Length: 88
Image (cartoon, rainbow, N blue to C red):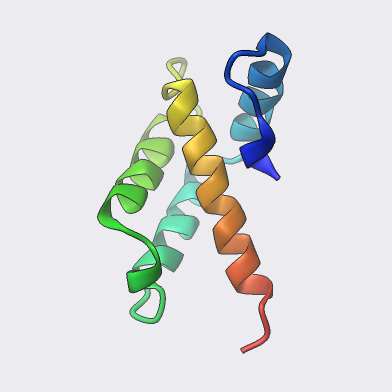
């Protein structure tokens, strides 16, 4: 869903920033906790977990992360939500 944003299109960037702003620091930390669970740890690389940490750190601040990081963070959220929906 989020991976469809075009970083060259200003309207897509505005929509992407709106999606990013919907998540608070607490939400990003919950996603990070999910990736650090033993059963999910191998599904998410160290770099992806660091991206989620940057998103949590900058959530609600005046300075947003780079657009590429926001897009990457939102795509990680997509993957997490897909994994949560899968029946075990």
